[in-house]
Length: 212
Image (cartoon, rainbow, N blue to C red; front, side, top):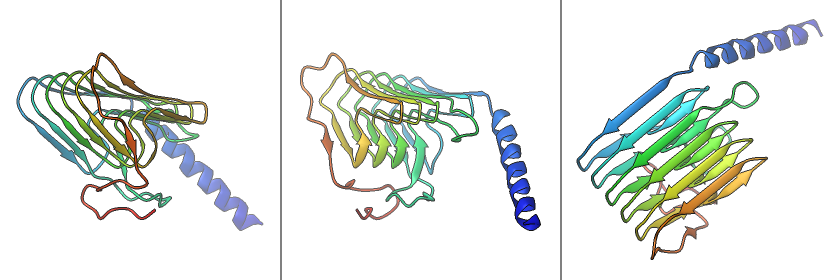
C-alpha cells in the first residue's frame, strides 16, 4: 500500500500546484477593432475568452467580419474539438472557476464558426457572452454553444437584428446543464430564420465532419 499512498500524495501535490498556477492567471485582455471587414482565425482559446478569473474582450465595431475557431483534441472524444472561443468563460472544474469572456460585434453581416464551448458559452462558474448588435449573421458550431451554460455557469448569445442562421449539434441554443443558465436572445428582429439543431454539424473547421 505504501507505493499507492505515495502516488496519491504526489497526484494531490500536482493538482494543488495546478490550482495555484491557475489562480495566477487573473488578468484582462482586450482586442478592439474600429472598422474594416476582418477575419479572426485561431486554433483554440481566444476571441473573447476569460479563464481562471480573468476577463477577455473582443470588440469589433464595424464591417462584415468572420470569426473562425478550430479546436484542440477533446480527451473525452465527444465528436469535435475544444474551441473555447467567441465569447466564452471557462473554468477548471473542481479547482478554479472560470472568468468572463465577451465577443461584441456592433455592425455588419458576420459569420461565426467553431466547435465545442463557443459562441456564448459558460463552463464551471464562467460567464460567456456573444453580443451581436446588427446584421444578417450565420452561427455554426458543434456542442456546448450558442447560449449554453454548463456546471454553475452562464452562457448567452444575444442577437439584436437581421435574418440569421443557427446550426449546432446539441447542448446549444439556450440550454443550461447542472445548475446553469443558457440563453439565446433575439431582440428587435422582425424576420429571422428558424434555429436549426441538426444531428451533426455540416462542417468542422480544419477537419472532416464528425461521426455521430
